[in-house]
Length: 141
Length: 303
Image 1: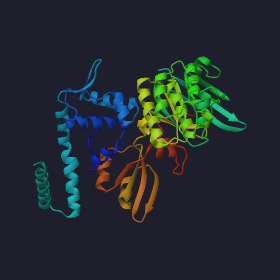
Image 2 (image 1 turned 90 degrees about the vertical axis):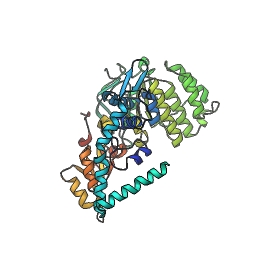
Image 3 (image 1 turned 120 degrees about the horizontal axis):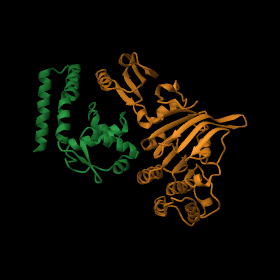
Image 4 (image 1 turned 30 degrees about the vertical axis):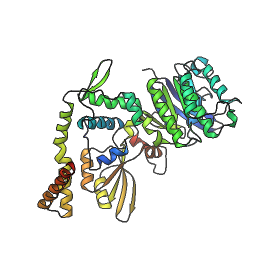
């Protein structure tokens, strides 16, 4: 499936709604996949129905259905006859595994490239990352 | 699937003027299609012919398996809501009641809920309603009829954005529960884009684009940034439009971009922005950025 985050502005775009260049059904699938990866939708939990998704995102129900079936084909959702769609066992671990695989490509490589353009050397960059991590840990306490 | 609406070689002439020129189009059941194009392109004529309000000069028109003209059986399953619809001199309550007698699938429950949501005064004469209220009445009838073929022709003259959003939301909700075939002619393309499954663009009486709305998303992308980088990125690609100011350039690139393209654009510090449905339609309908529409057209149906 398409990756969850493209460039660094992924979060901003998500907050703004479904407006990326990707087809709407792909975006619906990505949003649901994000929910699963972040634990918002637990494994074994029922996902919103096609009509609920259509109403929420203000899109055609057929488009929402295509998004759902994309995740079903991927084995991330499973159908329980007569009840609805549920998050498959192991879905979260799989999604996080895919994200980890893409972490270097999507975050580290652009970071290093931009640092190079600004003349920040590797030692400085490592120091900046360390500072940022302390900051985050500090906030957590 | 047998199409609900099937039109072949449809031509409509008015005293030497050609309003529709060999239009051929099939519409599958259970879909929402956006009928888009400029004023005078032939959208209203097309819908009027589907609703049996007008004759074709040539060609065949089949709606629900038969010719719609003076065919009561078909017309009870077709609701047509026009821009600035006129009504006989009735009160709102009576106008809605009259409509309810005509349409066999009519939902009193939905009509009641919509009348309340659009805040329509039941005892006022339709003639005395504001333009927006008259549009709202048309929408109430168009939705509550639950007709198998539901035609909306610019149904929201005078409606404010809040009321229009209410229309889109109620249309989607009721369509989800009671699927039917909806044709929506609109100029407010980006507003309605999410609703549409299919997009048909008419220009000068001909269909210039007929495709899935999903195929149009990302069909073209605006690329902007330093002119040198834009030139490097667009080399060998089909470019629709180029604009330049100082050392900055903006170009519209046709065709979907893949991950490699995006990574390359990011490395070149280029800003990417997909063209909206409205921008794509303006192009297809021969607007200022006009060019060959074939590039984005999945299928040309006009003969």
